[in-house]
Image (tube, rainbow, N blue to C red; front, side, top):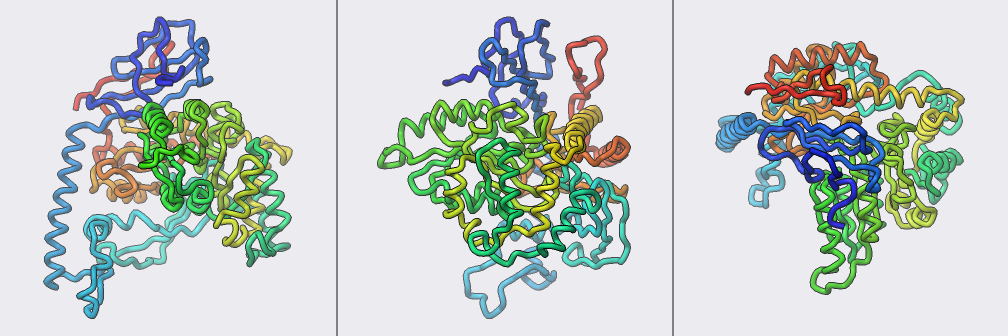
Length: 569
């Protein structure tokens, strides 16, 4: 199984095959992965693109177009970014020297004088980074809001008089800020409507806290109803809910894998998955992001060589992937992962934190998006914090799996039960998505999110920004690169009443800083156009339009959605 059917070139195709998941060669070109049914018309590839086509004739794993693009960082931008970090590092060491000799005051945590002979507790590179780089742009994070985090929100204004070491509130509220940062994919983060009304009603009946674990006296009838509804929504036998999304991963993976087991983890998996894998005591091997050749190589080696030293067969092999990768905006190549999992008889753990509710014609996640059988995924994980506007997470799958976790998962045995109003928010929003509330509101929100996502991504590319990820992903990373532009972009956007999230090291590679937009079904066309206009204005101000290709609508080539036009550096 060196080449899956989805990666085999068909007869008559003129497109060059590329490796799944790999970024393009250093030529500044855009890489696109296209997987679709064989068309009657001749396939075309632009000089700036590389495409992969599969056809149903060869048993294609993909039943719909699957397009992802990652444009290579321009060489000049990469060099200038490294230079920027180099200059900041040099001046950082200079300032640390001044602090050491008490010439400059140091505000950050330090050991007391009586502990001067102890091994340093705080002084390491990350602390150096915090003092000298993060503090310069700290005002872009932890901004307090004082409203519902819907399509618009209100922010409490704050100011710093000591270069972001401390903040003071001015008493002013910045109102009607367009929210492009919250994971409110389907717009259920709201204080009016059926979800809010149901949560308020349940609060009056049950109160807010349960004050016990599920195994003792904290198992409410609403918890039971919610878990049955989640299983029905996902199309599996059973499901179990937890009060915290992060702990759903970090506390359940150790219950599923242990010594003598092998975990194969995507290199861009979330920190909760990484922590859970490490806590399990299993051997961990990492494969390149969304690269099926890399995954299959590790699977083959695991089968052939077995465990280190003893060469005994692994007790189990667990493949861990995400539905949507929250920093890249890419979607897992799930049909290929399932094919490999079946071929090598491994288990699959799928984290749908960002994809559940946000993908698929019925909003049921990446499995629904590809039209696959939920039973092919051994462990389905997701969170209620995003599309459902609530809190917590779930594990779903076969009944035997869930019964095992009820008695072996630390998160189930020791954690307090979910709050009743949170449970009611999940139930009401999920019924809305399923159409069990007697309306088509949920279906309309899923459709609106998909429409907003495609529109926003297309417009950003037309403006000349470098955008990562899949065309259908509501997580849209826009590359900033240089450290100074991280803070500048966030501040300039807020000045124009647009709230965005900017991300840098260590959440991303050190030269791949970015802004991350999260699109919502609650965003209107006017809001998106206003945001796009401001992004373009700030992009011109900060010179962020790095893309060498501008997408122009094409009337001359009816079979191509976009034509790339080269832009000179």
